[in-house]
Image (cartoon, rainbow, N blue to C red; front, side, top):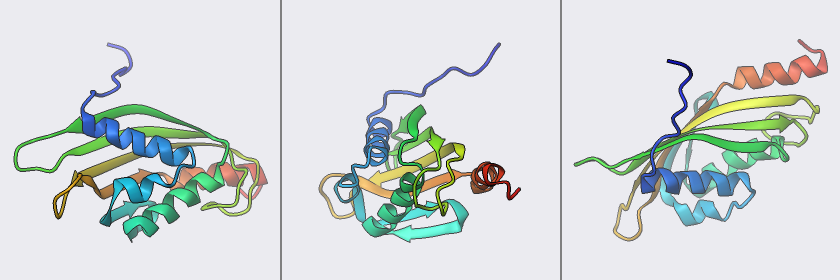
Length: 156
C-alpha cells in the first residue's frame, strides 16, 4: 500500500483553523483576539489549561519565541460539521528549526529541533455573531523537544 499521503479535506472549518495557526506562526498574534472566543477553553502540552486571549497568546508566543526562525508546515487539515455538534477541525503540523530564542524552552542553545504537533479546535458562537474558536487542544511531545535540546548541550 505504501505511506499515507492524504492531506485532509477542504472543509471551511479546517481551513479557518489552518489560517489561524499559520498567522500565529507568522508572528501575527492579532489573530488571537480576532479568531478566539473571549471565553475560550484551551488545553496545551504539559497539562496546561488556559483561558481566553491571554492563555492562547502566552502558549503560542512561548513556543514560537523559542524557535523564531523555524519553518512551520501544515501536513494534514480536516474540518467537520455534523448535526447537533459544533463545527470542528483537526490539524497535524510541524515546526523545524533551531532553538534560537528565549521562550518556552529556556536559554537558546542553537539545537536543531523538530516538533510534530496536533491541534484540534471547536468553533461556535456562544451569544450569536461570527463563530469563533471556543475550545482548543494542542499536543506535542515536550520530552522529545527537551531531548533534542539537551543532546546539543551535552547535558544528556
